[in-house]
Image: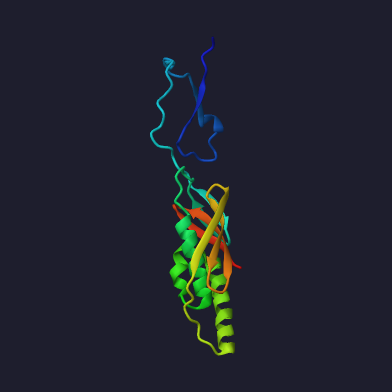
Length: 182
């Protein structure tokens, strides 16, 4: 058997006038014993390396980590977002109270609805009052890993409203990316 050869690059800087033959030299590999092959498999890694997955949401890129088996329970966030958004639109709550659970686009939509509601109260000459609300059933499903789509029923004395919410898992927290009060 003919020994294999390897090309070793010279790391010196040379002038363009020197020939390219001086850049490479051929040498035989050193005699090494082949690695021993064992019949036992290598030990499993103790931790799985996590590489962030870049996901486009709107105009900004957000980093979403791989979803683990135990996701946080979305029910309290769904309840608070639904109640909060209806109270904000009615004028009895400040919009900053739900800012930590909602994206900028959701805040913009709710603020627009709040302004329209305040214009209605001004046109009628009434003052918005606190309406007692109760959270009804919460229906949700997961169309994809790290995504929850839900409908929450909100009951008042006069009517029942439904709030459609889409939550996405960003880092380790749920965040509303779409919200519609019907």
